[in-house]
Length: 285
Image 1: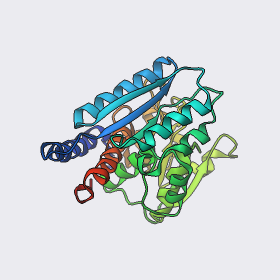
Image 2 (image 1 turned 90 degrees about the vertical axis):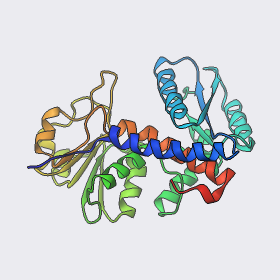
Image 3 (image 1 turned 90 degrees about the horizontal axis):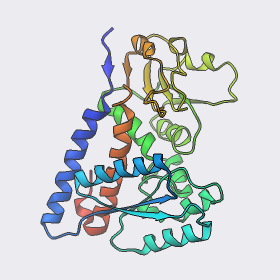
């Protein structure tokens, strides 16, 4: 069986090059540079690492990444006040909040404060609603990454049975909307699902996003299924055992599959927000 490797690293490079070229053309033509606000809390080493990685990716394509760090004991009111300031800041094109947030914060209230026009990470409830209804919006970066990978490598979505393991607000749930809007039949499985393998073994496309290393064994899938591993843990392992790949017709490697495309989705949507602000005729990334 000829296998397709859903190479997110290679695809992200191609998309990033296009983003960089269009931003350079705009800046050389006298426009300001685009700006993404990165909001984080406290001194968490993992969060710091992710923010640095996103900032470097922004720099490579010509986006200014501005870090806004709030103390660990920040109140919801203080966080909301910062977001409201960024909403009206004319040179801030996108706002991204780095997870996890401190336990005392009302995450939903904070993310729902983000202006829809700047919600480039797809966190606002209104953005979720737009995605569910198939309307144009800035979608969650991880689902966008997965759908773009499937499209780029010619994986048919329409009419296929897609099974998602994981129902998080940043992956499983919004991804189900995108796949439904593309006429897939969608099943979402989670920690309370009974007889998990009965569902996964019927999947034409299996998407895993539980961040449990080697959780998915070859028994989970039928021969010829497409496997998308969106899980990742501190050891660098994905959700799927490497032996799963042998049964798949197409699969995402870990690392180098979904991960690079998540950041690219964030960059792409930030660039789109920027072009809407400085020159709507230049959008279309």
